[in-house]
Image (cartoon, rainbow, N blue to C red; front, side):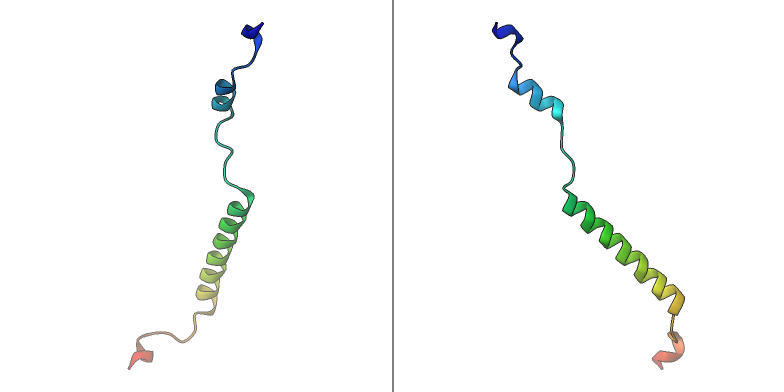
Length: 55
């Protein structure tokens, strides 16, 4: 009868790694969105920055 009982060590190995938690995915997504917005603002606004500002 013990032959049909599942081996607990085998079931743990088949499950694999559960992956990143939801908070880590959301934090990474927020960081990517912030960087993209920052780059867009820098490219679109630009300002009056150049060699003439430093002299």
